[in-house]
Image 1 (tube, rainbow, N blue to C red):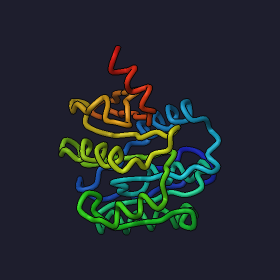
Image 2: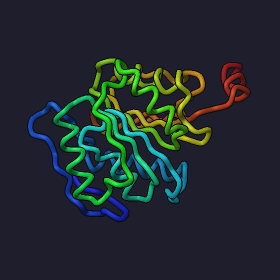
Image 3: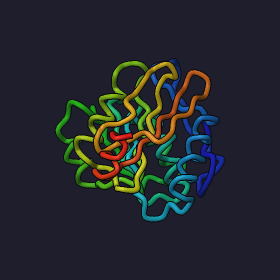
Image 4: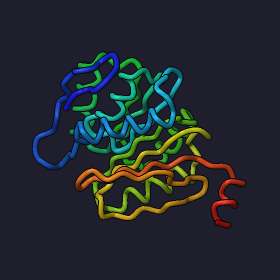
Length: 200
């Protein structure tokens, strides 16, 4: 794994051994960030990012390398947490990060932390495939309304898994498949837009 673009471009990230942690491939990551920048532009200054199920931190680190102001990393695995911190130091990005070794859905502290730093211009989520965590993550983001009006939630999931197209105030505006992996892109929409979508 490597950082694709920005200040830490080319830096190699420490990858886990075995299959317990499944990092996003460089090919999928590059495609993901191309779509993000096509939507939001390539000026990352001022953006606050949330990386859920962060694993090695590859996605959030990519955002920081490109110039994001701050990234919060959340993962419940102790192994992931150590790899994440190591990769942030290697890339020189630790000062612009906040790392939390917590379980997203079972710890009240996660709600407090995410609400404190919200709204997020970009939320990246790469939960274990086909476990129901993707849908639960969409519920979490929608329920707590932590995404900025012009923000994006990117869900990575197994290609054959179906996710909801809409969950107020989130709506899926794009979906891309790369082999066994699918990327779902959600935006936060206003109530008037949601009513119009329901009528069509």
